Image 1 (cartoon, rainbow, N blue to C red):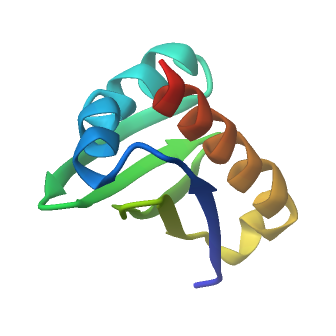
Image 2 (image 1 turned 30 degrees about the vertical axis):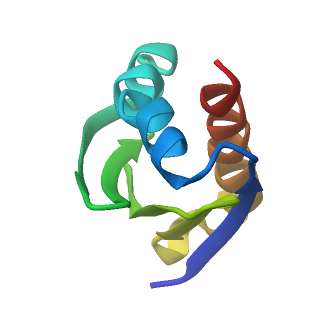
Length: 101
C-alpha cells in the first residue's frame, strides 16, 4: 500500500501538543461528517493510531507527537493515489488548526 507523510511544526512541547490533539479525531469526525465514516483511533503514549473511510476509501496511519512537531504517516490504497496530496493537505490543515485552538 502506498504511503504518505507530512509534518506540522509547533512550539508547544510534546505533552501540550498531545493535550490539544486528544479530541482531534472527534473534531475531524464532526467537521467532515458528510465525507468521513468509520472514524476510529486511540492514543498509545505519544502516538495516535487512526483509521477512517472517505468516499469508500479506507485510510489509516499514525500521528506521532514530538517536542517540536507532529509527524503524520499514513497508508492509502492504490486507487486513492490521485488524491494523496489533497488527503495529506487536509489532514495537515486540520492538525494546524487543532494545535492553535
